[in-house]
Length: 280
Image 1 (cartoon, rainbow, N blue to C red):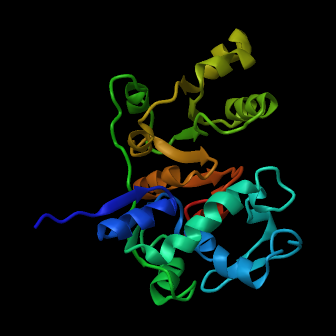
Image 2 (tube, one colour; image 1 turned 90 degrees about the vertical axis):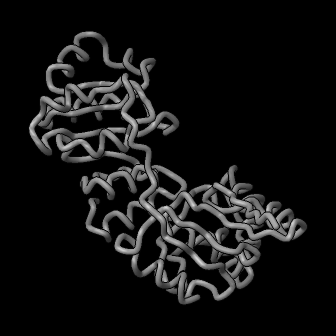
């Protein structure tokens, strides 16, 4: 007899898939793409809100997550708070999916035991909540393809651990003024740098500034090669908003991070990075 399983590749499963798996009588596994700490926080939401439905309406202090500890108000995603216009993310997506987690056979986490030992142990021991499925740390998971259009030849010319790698992705809401200040910081920091930046943002700096910046570093367009660049021996520091895939790439390559978390899971991810000793 043929055997099948259903995989859900999101940081938490769509609740509708559990019903499909039940109807087909096949196991359902979730692939979590965030930190174990943020996954645990989301998984605890049904318990938290059943005990205090106004937990995010009058949130004046820390949230206590069993086995995880305190989650400060500043680390709680802004979209979770009741006065946020995007509060529907919590109510219509995260909470229903968290309630469906007990119906999942297991969860593959893109992390590893050494990086989040206490959190993974808490999930294994049922301290977060006893109804959660088994977790399987399988990280780091990355893509190590540099491709033809890359700056590898420039990196090959640089001394070991001498280059600051800056990559905030393509969707991060960073203002024009913030980008200019990042550029000024890179120009005066005294280190060579590799900055990933969309081509349409280059006009913020002007030709004169770009020429001066090119004397000290390289600006490259976004591409699917972050993990491969991180693994290059010339990279000595990674500046990022703590998007979890990027954190795992840095951990795999042993590159220290300077975190600038913005929203969503990034502040909790930054706490994991600092506790693991990878950066701050």
